[in-house]
View 1 (tube, one colour):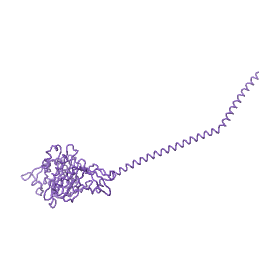
View 2 (cartoon, helix red, strand yellow; view 1 turned 60 degrees about the horizontal axis):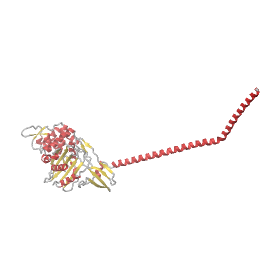
View 3 (cartoon, one colour; view 1 turned 180 degrees about the vertical axis):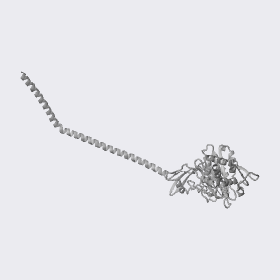
View 4 (cartoon, helix red, strand yellow; view 1 turned 45 degrees about the horizontal axis):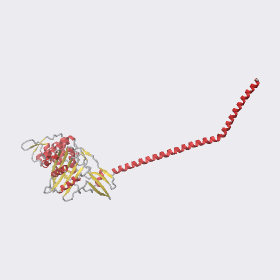
Length: 457
């Protein structure tokens, strides 16, 4: 029994072993049968993954390239548009305007302050800063002024904006007299001399001076160095000498106090012998300060026919007085458009120079105000000063009168300012009137009428 039992156990164990072997064999056979299909599935999966990866990579690269191209194209277009706009804006500079506007006729009364100009087969639309109403009034005033020639400049001293620039020639020969510098500056140059005395020599506006003879003459006998108060002399102050346009006082000032170097320096600061930037060509104002005493006296007092100035320049000199010592570049062209409407030029405000310190400018302003209150313009401007509408408007001026070298014509100047308390619409006005044997309306009267029209119309 024991043997039999042992035999049975071994047989069962053997049978189990065979079954396990059989199952392993069956699994092996089954695996071998499925192996080709498995390889197909694996290869297919690998190919699928590779294909997906390839397609994804291609799509990414393609889309990225298109996006970059689109961005680049958009940026390029933007740059191109900006470049076109920049190029269009800078197609004309202020220097380019002088030959371009050479044919511009300011003698035609503007209806709107704008002009059409034919140039090289194109029509340019020019927008200006001209106040058409004021410009038309000035034209009509000059035509009935009974002068041989006249010129008027009106500008805003804070910006340099030209509000009116009109000239008149009875013989209709001269053009743009406003821009010509072939007229003696006369006593307008006392603005420069007074500035040199106050700022360069620290003179008070109340400093005392003595003179002999007439105020409007200039003889060597009036220029002696040791001139003291006696029964043959008159006492005055720098302020009264300026407002009364006293030649002997300014002549002695030039010889004994200022001298050639200081006069030359301040003439240079006030832009004599300098080109004035403007849309139309402005002739250089000329000065040549001599070495001899009498020559210095003539220059400092303005009693000479060699110091030349343009009406435009005279206005700029006065603008420094009321604009804290600073001169702004004059401008009349606001904008220019071509036939397509494209802006090819835009005007702007710009500083031209600062000939005076603010404190000096304030003192010269007092001198010019005294010219209106007590000096050579007092009778003419009295009517304005008494008007209620001018109660809060500061008025100041400097006059100048001299004959031409042949004594055939009288050159009659005034440069003036009218500045309201608000200072937003203050003006500088310079008038040159040229008279023949018979005097027409004086420059200061023309200026008074123009100032009155500007602030009351």
